[in-house]
Image 1 (cartoon, each protein chain N blue to C red):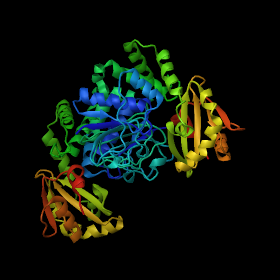
Image 2: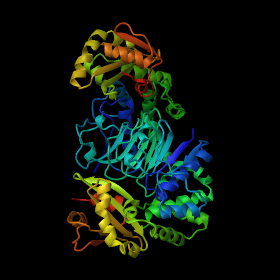
Image 3: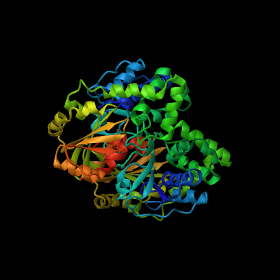
Image 4: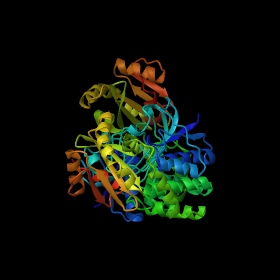
Length: 306
Length: 306
């Protein structure tokens, strides 16, 4: 039976790319029939990167069958996975997020979680000597995943390993990192086709702090003005999305990749208080700029206070 | 702050030994201050192996402090760990059991779970080239962990990796595996000092099947007659232990390492029915022999039916 390889429900470059990378490894190196699939529409950057390296967009699946062999990449959170995931035959998990709890397996399996910036870097390490067999398109995907998750090495999640691997691969591919990263970020910044609700849900994770449920959404862009021009309707949409998604508040952080800062939208007094307590800044008006804030994982979630 | 390295609450050879192995690795190879500790009294085999290779019995701790740096080995089950574990600073998890769920970390950490027989084998792989620096006592511990968890390669959990590593280390240590394994199993079989309740809890894990809670206990021995001579009082103790530990039934499997079979005690009609349904054998009387059954992980838990 073909093993399905997939990441989380909101496929970004690392999530979609690393599914394709590991499916290649299983098929071509381990001689195990495998197929990358997606649990949602890839974001514009992921779509760009897949096309750039010659990959078709993988099939989008709604759920997994009982007993289906699967490999989970770039998440260990059941809320970000198919409803039936705990009845699938989970063969392996490769991830770089905090352990959330909730996934269960019927027997011992292979789980590799590392505090690196990017799932693809972990995969490269797992491949060992076989990494030398990576094709140019697979190398291009690994590089894309690293540049995406590190925001071209600007994010504090970046490790020496991620950076060294990206630079090695760029050399082998004869690719200029700043030029290619700018193309990726331009693709990510092209949000014209998305509704406000789409933008609030595009790169979003739920977190609960002291029994208050937040949808913590991040939009990484090299053109923040395009997002902030829509501030009024985005603010209005926060309450609707919160109600529809059964959370208390939506926190939208518009991350300016080049200026290395985030703008948080302030749609009500609770979010104002959260912003002041969590980031130690005074807030007046309907948004606040947070200098240096780029990473949900390292800078936003660990500081969130209500 | 010194990192505490520990396994589960009922320290067997792999659990106690791998804590010492990883503490050595952190201290001597990674220059990270670390100390192996235990969460309970080691069993007689573990005590023998530690003494044989010149290790003091590590300190037994009752709980961990908020924010204490810890490495968890040979389990990922919060029920087998200190009550305060989710408030500790979990640095890493190295294990070979199924993912249970329930452990949470505040940020991404290093987690390595592999379907190998023994935690020490996974550690050896993680060490990479540094494994060549293992001292003779550390090699002896790794070998002891493998022989213990594989029952000298008899258990169906044994993989080629476990076996090859044990044989390599025995060669380097100039040790005869059958002789040394016999010494270890004799130590494990020396149960004279333990009460019936001790024996029922010594190597025991809780599992729930269709809302029925079992304490699934295993006694691996090369001298099953010593245990079975105490059958009447062990049978009587099952109900007491079940009541005290808030489970519905205790299942005690006396594993005869040399005959490669298990004897399950039958203290009531529910356990009789469970034995018949789970292992497809007719049961009459107060015990039943299960040919070939040696592994709780591979043969008992996956088959348990009520």
